[in-house]
Amino acid sequence: MDRYVHAELRDAFSAFTGTVVGMAVFAGVRGHLPIRPHGLPLVIGIGLAYVAASALLRGSWLKRFSSVREFDAAPRLEDTGAAPPAGVSPRRRPFNPGVLGFTVAFALPVALFWEPALIVVPPWLASDWLARALVAARWERRNGLVLWRGHDPDEPGRLSVSRRPPTRTATGAPPA
Image 1 (cartoon, one colour):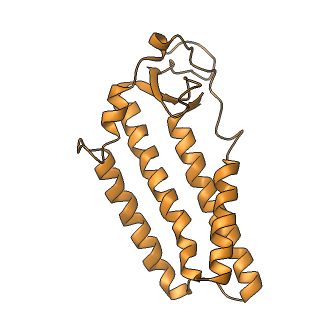
Image 2 (image 1 turned 135 degrees about the vertical axis):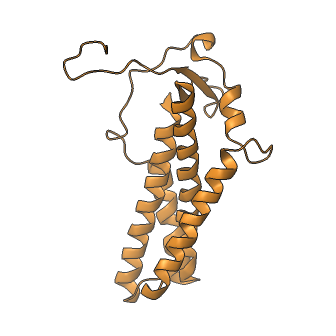
């Protein structure tokens, strides 16, 4: 079982890292980056605009785009019979090896042998994961709940929610 926000951030970080690795290898083989330096601000601007638009749509109640509907419909973890895990830090597992491998395996050959500009496809996927993480973090904070994925082994992508653990203080005393 994994926290939803952490899983989405891990996937996004893996895709961005795979793209950087792919671009470095591309630059080493071809002698230049797949995207010209004067075009990089445009690509970054389009990416940020996409994250903003995706977060707005996912945070809305529109039927086909909304993630909030999914979050609100998630069952309580206590009702499913599972207990929330102790909380695995994303610092222990910062990468999703599958996403990282797919990013390098997809982006690098496509960029080297076909079209260099297609190396921006994995960051486009990553920006969607980043938008999902932003929407989920906002939803968690507003509702005082934590989203979990994977409580059901038959459906590993199924969501559930639990109460947010109490805040810890520096001395370990309960908050006042």
